[in-house]
Image (cartoon, rainbow, N blue to C red; front, side, top):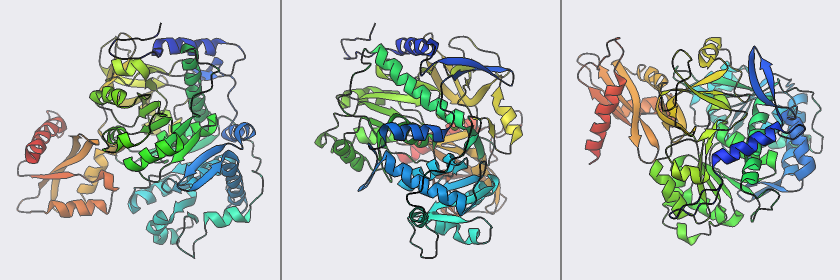
Length: 578
């Protein structure tokens, strides 16, 4: 039965019915979504039997089906699926002929959201190269670490990143290609595409086991780790989301019906994160959906684009939907096409869910739970379920994903018992690049240890209550406390320090720090912030730094009592802001 409520006019099938429909699709022999089991290193995984062999096979299939349809809108530029693919093919020719990129070679993309980012991704993966998207907000030290660590053969950068890296790259043997260049001496993306204009996409035979990409993620261990994914990892995530949509259509008796408005997604988040790369770019390409790319977030511009392009799907960190909902000019725009207002990357406050439901006439809030290491696949909460259970991240996207709550020894816990949320899926990464210790520590019996502490309720809905790992999530960006602490220790006169999360209404969390100085020394905390900004991306720099006259509190083990510090300084921040 469908959910109905006198207070909430909801007539959407709950997740249990959608999951049942998905399991029916999985059991149908010969169907697009048929699921079988495969043994990988002694562990059984549910896998799609009829999945495309590789990303380039998928790209070509999409071109045959949707080639002339509009795919990408960016400012005043409009591209069909064919337009994007043909420019990617020209660029792929250059990668092979001018830069000798071979299967398995790492190619860095260091740029903000531009159409060239997408073209480069398609080109690199089509010839078997390994795409390494680096966070565009990083500073020089972070970039050089990532480029060296992934053993990059080539860097593709936008103009701003090029100027940041130019002097360092000139001392290396790594060539660089510049998109949106303002330097006449640079080799530009546009020149290379023009050079091979009209050439077909090179033919390279790849398998599902071929490595597709390395995404760097800030965990609890200081330096970012390179999460390695195969072609099958990405394709399985895309196919699961397509299966979810099909299962929902069956559950809601809308299968085969044309939507009132053609699907159109608004890309509000950066492509160097899996949310934008997988859920927006790749899923849009895979499904034939139009995507409107924003260069940077602006709620007023987002409202204009929703009306102008008839956007149906919005996805961003919770801050974005909050700013959209609270914008003083919201009522001036037609947002009636918006049917799904999704969030990921950070927790959405429960009270925002009902407000979004009430604010947008046709739109339903939803949320997804996934990580870089799961290629954004994990759990989903939407429709009536999300309004009724706003504190939950949803249920596992069965049958591909299995989520268990495990104790520290790997034993599954009972309903409502708190433990670490662990995810098993063929879409999970296969390893951390050049880090076998982290790889071993992060998996147990085929399940990825997320570092999130949570529980399942009686309906299988997952709730996150805390984090096991020492990270801060600021507006969807993961920040390693250890990395920031290490940078603070480079500043003169720091005896000890601790970095921790502070609550923030807009961003969810911000970075706080407390330092104790060596005897008879003093510092200017603003100077420390400026120093850190030269070594770390801006979002990692502590918003507030306190100086403690006393040694920092310790646990019985001798470690700094970070939980106590978070309580003390959260209260202090509240008092200071009154």
